Figure (cartoon, rainbow, N blue to C red):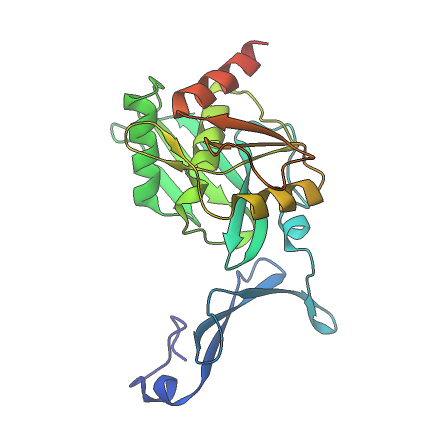
Length: 242
């Protein structure tokens, strides 16, 4: 293996074997993710979550509780995203900090998410929702050292950004997931019922997503469905005034 975590030399070895597994994780965190890159006899979109202990690696049966264990409840700029890793639902904290920029070109620092996607969300907030946020420094972090690639995180990122900008903390028992379009709409995403069941399992009481109609698995939850991002932005701003 090279320092970048890739198989060194020609990829003959990778072609010869039946499975290639990677251990991922930040050295500053105690958990590790086992991810399959190649598997001839099964899917490669499943993960295993393990925690480093004094006795070695220990399986984490409920990763969502691990990633939300040290969340700062009541702090503005923190939103819980109901994501998917393969067929496993995970609740992940999205942290955002919007600060006045002393520079001519505001900073954009992103950890664990696509910086190009952040730029798109900021543009939609400015153009479609009238949220003046582009002149500020933006810092975005996915807590726990995880990396998110699915577009369903758009709504959680937008909620965290608006919360930090307005200083209005988001409800601690709420989750956010949905894809934002360039027109300012909120689109539903796949595995909605699975995400909601995981949300209810961890004791959360409400979820915010796109227009999906009746949802299986939402009996114990209050589901707020938004057709546009502007409606969510107005709701968060109204909570600050209240």
